[in-house]
Length: 431
Image (cartoon, rainbow, N blue to C red; front, side, top):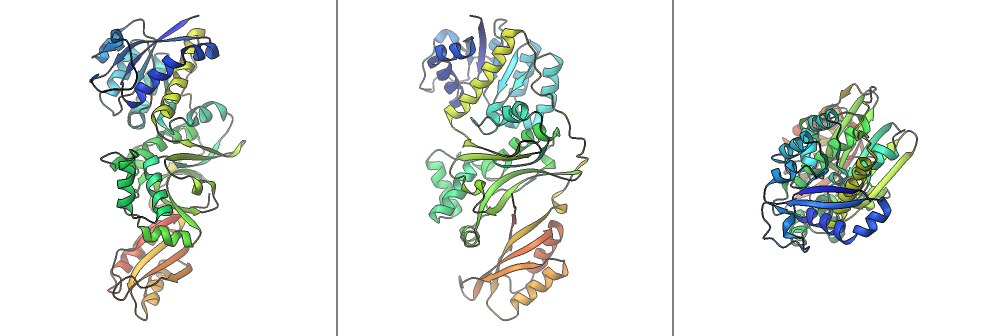
């Protein structure tokens, strides 16, 4: 049985999970794949931390260069995260004739175009299934299973931390800070959760999905990104009364010749499948021309879920190496019908809007008058019970409106002396 050797750079949570799978299921994987996969070297900057898995000390390397330079290593698995030095390690490994497996969405979102080009030039591959949705096989499905399809849209719940927080707010009637603290206590949120709660992690993943579906490698600055840190419990409750749930969605949608790429809190009908995706789970809804609507669902993070995806990539590459094949993993065809990326100001949607206003006659007339001035039509309006001294919440749903005009209207309304808090507007999607 042919042996394939791999070197691991990064022996943290996911890396130790990969080692555990390859060790504990060595015979199982060999029987299924016809391959003997051998761990040749493991590199990490600190081996003093307990990993819960024992390895032969002869495999341990302090320097990534030991892995890169080893001529017996066929595949380099990069699991350190971040852009640098991860990019340098991958580039150097490609130059040494090694294939790559990574879970590094931030790196690929920022430097993927150049790394994929370098890999193709050298007849090597970069596989990255674990970079989006952990163990959910969305990359393989888009790249292989749906290869005959053209895509219309992607709607993804791509960040487990944000989804856990919003789910807790909805089910436990707790505010954002309380839900965040609970997520941190349970290990679902980092000490610094900025990348997760501000939508940056979701945007990294959306870049990769957009490239796979539309052949467009968008930049971070091309994506409208809005996080969930300003979502209040009041809005979660009012939305539920309207039959809506708030989710942080990553969206890529083709409208004629334009492509929308955005990440933001979104209201969706409670009977939509995405509305029932709770906790740390992820889900990706894809609309294609041949296969139709598809939903991919599962844990979006976790040691063994992510490690499972990494091992899947390792086996795929190992089988190609054994057969002497080169199958370009990123032979992506650009969707020529998409001619430009639209800006958020051009976006049109229905909106949920909440105003905190003085409880006095004529307030609603002033608000509706300004909305009408900008061509914004009200579908429904509800005045809630008074919260504090003569201040009441006014909740509106408006018909499809232009984002730019809505923002101008809200700025003007915010300047009214009867408005006591900045108005809140959340986009509504019919998926």
